[in-house]
Image (tube, rainbow over all chains, first blue to last red):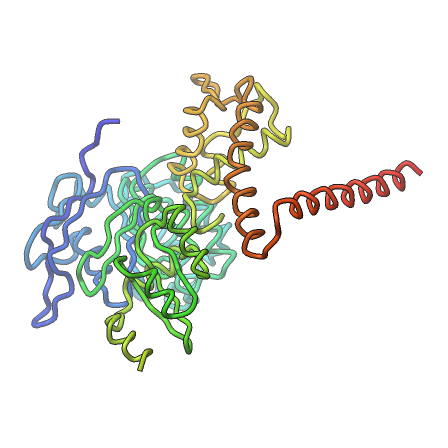
Length: 304
Length: 132
């Protein structure tokens, strides 16, 4: 397969607000037609990055390009993009049906029949003031916009605050079905990592404004193991390996070790009386973005 | 889905299991990549990778424009490979555990035979009840 031109290209992107830096030197590119997760803690810079990709914010340094062009005030690019932002505001008296009626002006590929179908699936009241909709119903409106816009680049920022489990699964199923029929680039930020991890093909992780991870979801899965047992045994096994996280309970310790363990490693661990378990996708992201106490400090505290 | 292993491998294994159990017979059509993706709620690219793994191994074959089918001889091929894995995944760990518990190889053989007889007795009793 020959590599395609990236649909999103971000180079050395930084954004500072007075003395706060929201994004620092972020560089990555996304191939077209993939579902990519943008993960990270609150305040990691996810929304700032999304706003810059959709031309709603200016970079302090570096550049963000979509379809090879600067998205700022670029209607050709923006017509091919849909940004579903968290807590989207609408004018007074605006009802859901007004929002859907206006959508074809903004999105070149808008599919009204598909939107109607989704309104039914999500049970969205059309004739109620958007401001009076519940948090979940407002999220449903955003999700409907995002899906029915069929935009070649669709960006969802925390699309399902307040959505119940049924509605979230409706969203995942509809996204997959529609994506399978009409492949497009989807960038999705979320905190419900375990729920979406199987949908993702690629993962970007931001932490304190810096890009921590940029890799395929498949390569991330199983790329860390939790090893538990007596602290001394655990530490001698962990010696020379990259430890992402370490927890202790009395004389017992659990460490998260980065990198795949070979069959021989597994046998060695089991022979040393240690328990080895896979680390879930969500746990791995949590471990990567949790400030960890330096290992030597923890170790000395335990052995005192 | 099991967290520790790549999803595409797990998809490939599930298809293999269906072929072994006879749920998918040789020359039968298998679901499309998108159907797998929807059913297991996984990314279509991942499902495609799992299916392609089986195509590379000659378990499945593609008919352009029609779909994916189970190859003739797929069942034998899977059985052969699974038998090799059986030694690694079941026999070897069992021997290691037996050694750590001080069970001698002779004692282990005896235990397997006894277990086999017990299972057969239960099976016979069950089938007798059914025929009555």
